[in-house]
Length: 112
Length: 112
DNA sequence: GATATGTGTCAGACTTTTCTGACATACGAC
DNA sequence: GTCGTATGTCAGAAAAGTCTGACACATATC
Image: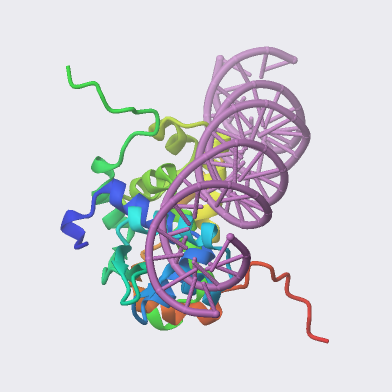
């Protein structure tokens, strides 16, 4: 996530993912190390479907990474870990990312 | 906005302010230099009330600064400029900011 | 079998954000 | 006065985001 390859879409996705107190807490908790969903939900005091949704958004932005594994006793366990990114934002960086920012009323498809 | 003084509330406010394509465009446009509201609205192709709202959010987060001035011919003109900030975010930085992140279900007032 | 653990997903309600159109003010020029 | 510029604000609609409760599955243990 160096400034050179920071697209407007990636910047927007990252900021949107970080624009929620729950997701900040989740990311902060994963900074210590990987954890699986159900336990993380108990630690943070939130419902599992809700945590699932927030993790999904964080993963879509590339801020966390999940991997489904099989524990020794055979149960499926999904671990999440924080991606070691460093996001840097300044007015100039935002300006540089604008050309790759999707237009709101644009649905792609117009390459005639 | 050095990491040392980045509170959870400030981080959340900044990310929330940046989590919108219009506001990214506004901030990018102001990276070139100051501009007044009505002209900026025409340049960005958005309604003035809408731009006003977005500028308000950017200002609340401390990302832009507005100043109402009197032009030479006596008309009131409000100029906005980008604050020269540099926001840096990483899992560790988020974790460090968590203690100063307001609790969702907290309305202050409970110091009995 | 029943109970515990883990996984994922869905509909619907609720809340927040976004956006428009209309209204208000003030000043200068015709 | 009327027209143009600038400013700010408001109510209400529309869209997006958030959250819960229930459902599904699988595996291990009692």
